[in-house]
Image (cartoon, rainbow, N blue to C red; front, side):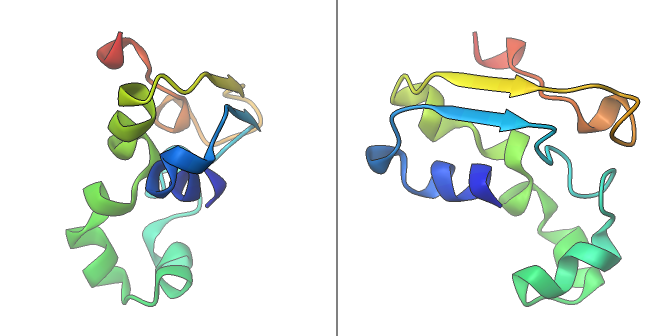
Length: 90
């Protein structure tokens, strides 16, 4: 959720640092578990996933040249799909 806040408020962010941040809602917590936090049903969240998934929304931070730092390890989270994928923005 902090990464999503940063994306929605890039003018208030100097940098982002996260330790095991959720990057892919579907693979980490799962859509059914995450949906209530967004006030949506699992079906609604699934259909709007790109609008809420942190790594699908990084463009405002990149545009504002906000430094991003994340510690990630596939053993602590649920796999490669939850890791940050910055190269597409470089």
